[in-house]
Length: 122
Image: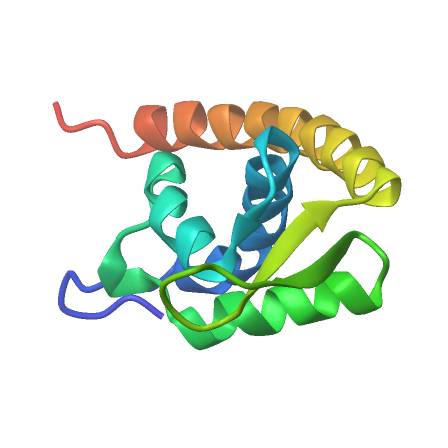
């Protein structure tokens, strides 16, 4: 609910939008969780609205669903890290997400157009 000009209307959709963003980043190249968190800024996420725990939970969930796979990567300096890779199923889901977003983009544009006409200040 929006109160006192502090609207959290988009907060519920952030979690759902993480999945396609993470999949698209992994399509570009395999990465560690921390690297993915840093790259999410490309999609409009900021450090203030990203909970690292939620990213790692999402990655584990996607691995359980067969969308990504991971393996431990041991670097010379530092601890072992999980390196995530996109699977074929994950790539197929990217295409499905993009198609759904196109439809929703049209709906959002229509809503905003009607909203602006309805609440236009004259």
